[in-house]
Image 1 (tube, rainbow, N blue to C red):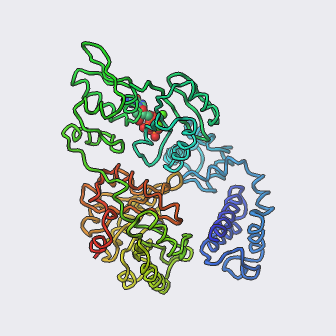
Image 2 (tube, rainbow, N blue to C red):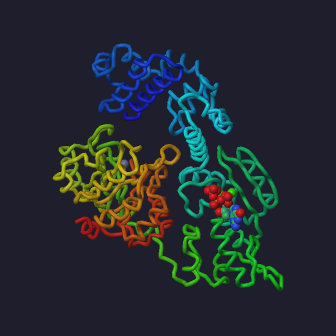
Image 3 (cartoon, protein in one colour):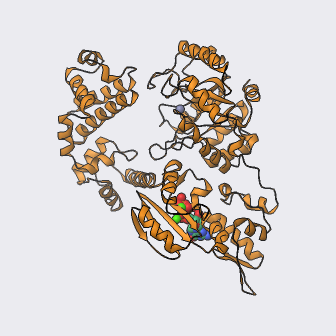
Length: 562
Ligand code: DGT
Ligand code: CA
Ligand code: CA
Ligand code: ZN
């Protein structure tokens, strides 16, 4: 329902953008953007509306209303198709670059003959952009940065994509004979390529890989690289007696490996993929598993998630590594949506899904009513939801806590009145609009929300969407100080598209004594399982159970909120 409104709005936006790129009449263009905005705000399904009803929407005349009906019915309109045919396809891709809108694309096309991101990069490197009227040297640099960011986003995988690639390649391997290494094993929020260590003989594995890979990039006895979709997988082969050192080496990080080699050197040893060599006497000591290498070096085994040379090595030597949270420590999920707004589970179904995962509670935190949010809850519907939650809780082994994800508006105020918030079990407050505010404005906006007595958790604090939206500009030091001073928790949003906060600020918050709260932001039952990504991320931020709100049972959790 919501998707079709969003799709129609996107098509209208593209219509306007193409008019602008081709240099058509300005008045007409604004009408398309305005119509797109009206439609994305509509609480009704545009597909159910008559021509007259569409025409009655402010800013939508008869001509546009007809185009909208055509888009609803066919996904496009003949005029739009004609415009697309007029424009080199590379120009539309250029719109994905941050800071590049249709007006810029029009100028670059007309004044410099640029028709793709590659063209644009070449022009910027050859200093041809600064020669165009209205663009300077600064703009040229910004373009290059946007291009780099766009390419990185386009190639790095999120955790869910990486898991799918691992699952596909695993079909060519034998369970128990391999381990995924690299950034995937370290639990990074995004993964460049997949690294696998296999102790199975290469010939057999290579034969099977040919069956699952889209391309054999490089095939060998020591190492094979394949392409699956847009992604690369490196497989390193090792005899079982050297599996430990190969896995350690390929897990990294590079910085961690370097520090570990220094420790070995201090003991007169050389550490490499094959084992530990005695630098004087020669001779290679081999290790079938990682534990035995760490033990030999006089250290505790460092969990892969914290192998980043951020202080963990000294602690491993002193046998004082931090205890890290584990999936089994999690008692509930602190950010869940339902069919009352844009989720697809009813409250009873949600309670059942929580019980099936062994949870003690789930925090129902639907969107509050405000501009730009479809079906957001107003105070009356929140009260009704509360009554239904009470009903469900009579029989459910998994308790539904009643919360809200209240909007932090552009001026820092909340989109619901205080008495409504005061009645809820827990309040998550998040930014869902005006993401591009200046750093100081955005920081103060979140500080104002934290200053409210009723806000317990700041949801997805940076607002980033991996691969499509950069983090908001934020003074994270001030946010963390204020979170500590006001006793507000910061969210670890476990959606693989968000992973927000990321590892470094989690660690910083933890060290400052700020509570963290893992929430999946689930809209379906399946998405509740994204909790695993949140746990990995919390581990990367050095969190023990005591640093996380949702390792507590419901009563201590509610006690904290009070
Ligand atoms: P990614 O793929 O960009 O997400 O990051 P990683 O960490 O998976 O990096 P990748 O795939 O280039 O290399 C896999 C592991 O191999 C890396 O984590 C550590 C090890 N490694 C790679 N290059 C070097 C190096 O120059 N020196 C050392 N000591 N280790 C390296
Ligand atoms: Ca990698
Ligand atoms: Ca690699
Ligand atoms: Zn949200």
